[in-house]
Length: 308
Image (cartoon, rainbow, N blue to C red; front, top):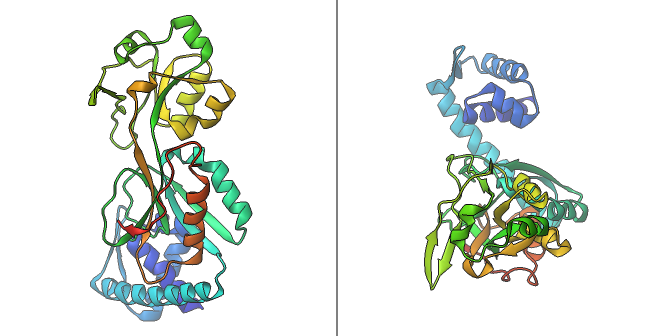
């Protein structure tokens, strides 16, 4: 067991080239990672890492040992997956990467946890472009199209962006009749944290797409605060329709310019392709496919699996 633990710790440290990051992922301190690696080097009588105060890199011997450890650990993981599949019971840790709007999905994620108490969700909220396989994720949720022959993709549903404001704001400032009239309104804008760019409010008129240069009354890198500001009557914001579902239902927000906003964006689940999909992955994707985008609300779902 000590040998196996050492291999796991070494592999994670070698893949991340950071004792601190390896410790974070394994729930250990960087000091504990360093000591475990030192014990492994002593047992093997070989140096596996070149260390400095600023960096960690593998020695040639470390690179050879990493390749062998990865094969061994992958074989063990496949064996465990086969046993889990034979039991047909979703269980174990499920590493999921979700966009920064993911907190808006928490009601569905909470319902999944209640339905599958033996699955431990390990959620990474990020808009960065993750490598599903290299970063060790079981499932990645992303918007837009994706192409990767190593991944299986399921489209969970489609969503559209809507421009919303509170009844109080519209009563005070008027309801815009055209997108061009938004230049006279308080616009609450979303900035992509990865690129630093504002998300464009895209419009369609007579089949042609166009956008309008808008003022920025407030800017945020997350959708939730913009929705909250709009509910407080501080302006109009452009948000995914699933993100304002409850606000539109209870009347705290209403849509405007709906005839000019008709984008249709896929929301996908992606996971590594293989002969067998682990039960925990299948259960998670199936649950989101059934509950994330109710057909009564959005445009329905696509339930067929296909290579991404």
